[in-house]
Structure formats: structure tokens, C-alpha cells
Length: 257
Image (tube, rainbow, N blue to C red; front, side, top):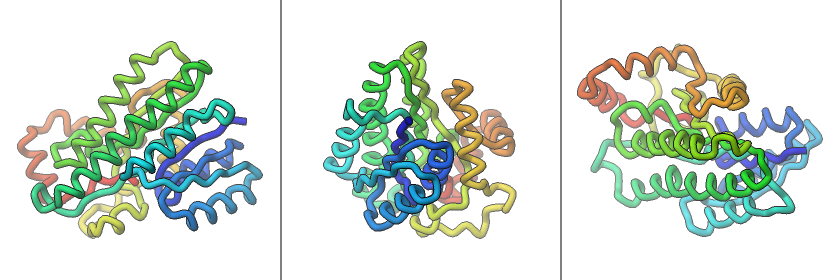
């Protein structure tokens, strides 16, 4: 039986991945900061699907938290076959309105943690000749919008580059770039969503199903909805100055978690 490790597992896209993997018969390692929620989630998934669900409490904005998950990913006797780097957050406010401490924390979670956990996982996977990594980015990666968009752009570029370097090894890497998903993400960041049209919202479970189909097909980039594929096609043609003006009016609301 294969094992999947998911960061940011207790809500939103991470919880949707956990539900899907459990339903497919994968054992789980659930990673988040809230031990109580993790334990409740693990019990529910075990009781419903008969899989083993391990709880790993870790704050990926800290050195200890990242190191804890790195160590679990590197255990040869309990290998992880699938890694989903989903942990992340948004900051409310424009550049210079957000504290430097919060900006650096975002870089720690969105960039350093993703780099280190992906590296720990793929090193073991390459030795076994199989495995998969999904790094959750965002459509914000394709528009000019502050540290959040920049960090997600890094996730996309890093993942696609690593996927190319590991081609033929049996290890697949994919950057997942959703748009607006109905999760706790915006509420936790204190962001209003009243001005977001209803047709832009995505369902987390359908998003995960589409993402896993793309991973199975060997794609290194997944924009799992025709609406957002069309929008991102338009983004490539639009002047960057216009995009900057639009995204500055909407605030930092491009959040997939």
C-alpha cells in the first residue's frame, strides 16, 4: 500500500487531497499545526476508509517544523510515495502595508519549505524509481502581485525545472495552479470575497480529481479548470501594466488553500 504525505492537510485543498487519497486506499501522513484537528481528521478517514492515518504536527514557518517533516520524508522503512506541498497562507494588504516579518514568513513557508520537502521526498523516490510530488501554487503565479504571487511563481518555475531534471527517473513533479477555491483561506487572511464573481469559484474535490488526472498524464503544470485555462491564456496577451492595475484593486486574493 502506498503512503501520501500532505502538508496543510486539515482544510481546503489539503483536506480534499486527504479525502481522495484515503478513498483510493492510500495510507496518509497528515501534516498541519493543529494537533486536535489532525487527530480528528485522521480518525475520521481511518474509520471511513480503513486506511492508516499518521498525525505529524509541524509549523512550516519554523526550522523545527520543516526539519520534522524532512525527517519523516527521509525514513527508508516508512517511505512516502506521494507528497503534496499544500501549506500556505495569504497576507492582507499591499506591498509595504504588510510587515517584513510576515513577508519573510511567507517566503519560509512557500519557498524554503517547498524546496526542502520536495528535495527530501524526491531523493528517496529516485532511489526507489517511483513517486510523485504535487506543489500547490496558484494562478497568482502568472500575474504581477507582490510576495504571494512571486512566491507562487517560484513554485511553478522550480517544480517544472525539477521535473525536467528528474525525467526518466520514475519520479513525477507537478505544480498545481488553482484559482479561487471555496476554503478557509480568505477568511483566515481577513480578505473579503464579495467582489469575486460566483463563476470563478472552484470546488476543492473536483479540483483535486482534475489535478491527479494531470499528474497521471505526466504534466508538470496543472491549471485544473477550463475557465482558468482561458483566463491565463488571456493573461499572456494582456499588457503587464494593465494586469498590475487590476490585481492591485482586487488585493491579495489569489489564494488556493
